[in-house]
Structure formats: C-alpha cells, structure tokens
Image 1 (cartoon, helix red, strand yellow):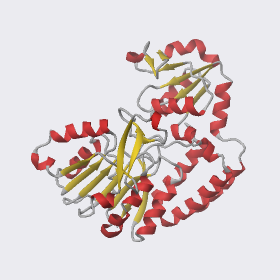
Image 2 (image 1 turned 90 degrees about the vertical axis):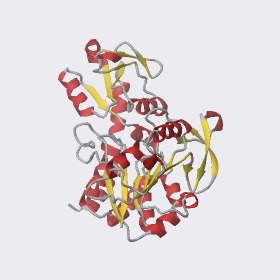
Image 3 (image 1 turned 180 degrees about the vertical axis):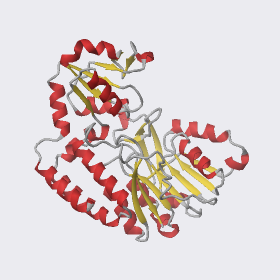
Image 4 (image 1 turned 135 degrees about the vertical axis):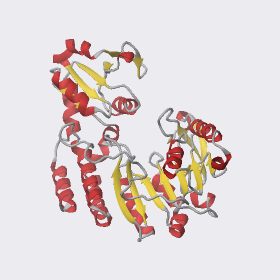
Length: 379
C-alpha cells in the first residue's frame, strides 16, 4: 500500500468534514437523560478529568464489573453501581467506556440492549481544538508526509496511518488500536538488540519500573544506568527500590532528581501520583511541587551512552535538544515517546533525522489505547 498517498487523501477528506466522530458522540450524550462512565482504574482518571475540563458533559454515576467497587465513591463524587442496576436506565442513558478493554465491555453492553455505548479517549478530548483548526490540519498533512519519507519499514507507516485515523474517527468497532499495538515497549525485538555493555539513560524513570525492566531484559549484564526523575515522590520510591539491590548492581546505577529540558532552570510541576508522570505547569499557585531541569549533555558529558529512553509528558523535544551533543557524538539507540502532543508524531522523528541523518527511524505503538507510541532511532 502507498501509505503516503492514502494518508494524504484521508487528510484531504478530513479537511472537508463538518463533524468528527467526537462531535457525534458528544451530541448523543447530551441528548441522553443520564450519563454513566463504565470502568474504574488508572485510565479512567485522566479520561474523566478531560471530560470534566474540556466538555460540558455531566457524569451521573459510574459502573464496573468488579463487585468490590460497587457502592463506593470514586473521582471525588461519583458512586459506582452494579451493571445490573443500569438496566432501569436503559432507554435514557449514554455509557462512556473508560478502560483499555473497551471492545469487550462494548460487546457486553450491546448484548444487554444498551443503544448508546461509546469509548472516548483522553488526548482526543484534550486536542479537540487543535484538530479543528484548519492551519493545524494542513501542518499535519505536510509534516506527516515528510515523516513517511524517512520511516524505515512498512509497519511504521501502517501504524502512522492508524494513529492518524484514530485522531479523527476513533470507533470501538471500526478502527481502534488493537491491530497495531505490541507489549514490548522500548525493546521491540524486530528493532532493538540489547548488548551486554549497554549504558542506559532512563529519562522519566518514574518509580524505577523501567530500570528493573531493562535489568531483567539484559540479565543484569550492562555497563551503567543513569535514571532521571523530576517528581520527588517517584524519585524517593525509585531510590528505595534501588537501595535493595546488591552492591554489584546498585554501584552501576546513578539516580538524578532532575527533569530534562534544553536549559537549566527551576520548574513547577503537578505530580501525577500513582501510575502517572509529573507534568510541568506555569501557574505556580497550582503547582504541587517544584524541582530543577538540566541538559543531558551537561550532566553526562564525560559518560558513555548507548541507549536513551524518554517518556516525560510532552517535554521530549526540548529534552532531545538538551541531549543533542551526546546524540550527535555517540549516536545511541533512541526510544522517544511521541504520543503526548499531536505534533510530536512528526517533530521528534524529523528532528532526530536532521541531527543524525544516518539514523534509521521506526514507529511502534504499545497499548490498545492512545498511549505509548514510541519513535525508535538506531544506527
């Protein structure tokens, strides 16, 4: 398939649309007497936050298949009721699925006779205004075409096309992410081959989960790990976990309570809490904590680096610029998340290719939702 041509034609059609799938969903929800969110877990929190902050949809209650959650209050003021109790609202209710198991739940509810069952995603709500700006759509078309020219394999192009279609036409049955995701984030076997002498830089190390994944995958055969985490709570959890390792492992791991950007400065951030990364914010009074950012090329200027992973909630481009000297001189393997902002899907691969033209560029996706799209660059 000529994916470049297909994407171009698809985006031409998008620019002619007067309504996207998200608009239809919102309209049908607003025409319903009751609104229920189905699925309570880590994913539901950001989605419900986006519904409340970026729409005028009022959620009446929650539901979940887990009976341990029934009768409890979540999201500050929403009670979880059993799925069986939804039956009495059947003709007057719209149900929003907020779980990665959306296909299974969708089928369950349709079989029960519910008519208005939808899945909505966090970033589609956050980016609604962006996608309805004609200039932005032209930018998408132009830059995605440039990325298609540098992608190394057909799989990357297929993933790009599916990601873009999900921006505008996400549908539980029609598109979705299930055909393009794999569970091997940061180490897809068809792209990444780890050696016994890796010096791994973990940017956005959270509580150390990706450190321990890396150690497991290398069988503890590596030269060094450098882990950066801005959030003090996450950093302390990571420190506690690393401290429990034996000295042969611990002595090869260095932890930094810094964020990474293209400059050294003090920053304020809102902690994400359990399961979430911290996010920079500009309103100091709304910040839960403060910290410091540095440039990777300054901190590790005398160190060998073979692999850099970044997942830092939308700051990846600036962090890459702060690592440019290391990337240019050492040409490490790169695994950079590109899902936090629409423009990162082209800004990251094009920037990497610009500073080191020899890099081979790949795109992979690693969840059945919109999260964890990664740009890989290898020599």
